Length: 85
Figure 1 (cartoon, rainbow, N blue to C red):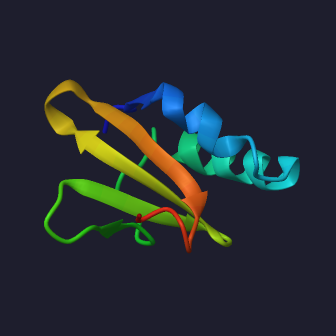
Figure 2: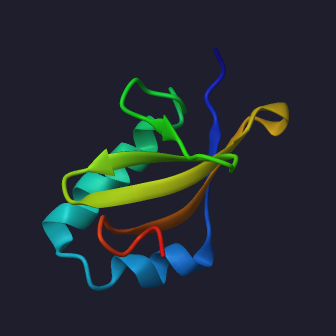
Figure 3: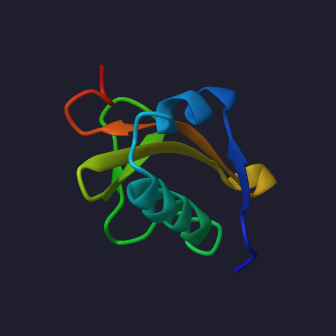
């Protein structure tokens, strides 16, 4: 299985600003792992959409997988209470 290219939207940098540094490091590590396996057992496909989400503590990482071009696009990162709005 080929490694997927990770693309992070510019808005994700803004999403990461209020998050504590130790949690940001964990989130970025989790994002790096998506290159090897974009559909880990802990991922969940969101209903009615082509997006997926994975959990990292109290934070959620929303992303889209494009198998045709072997790319994972990180769409949004945020606290679990706010990220789906």
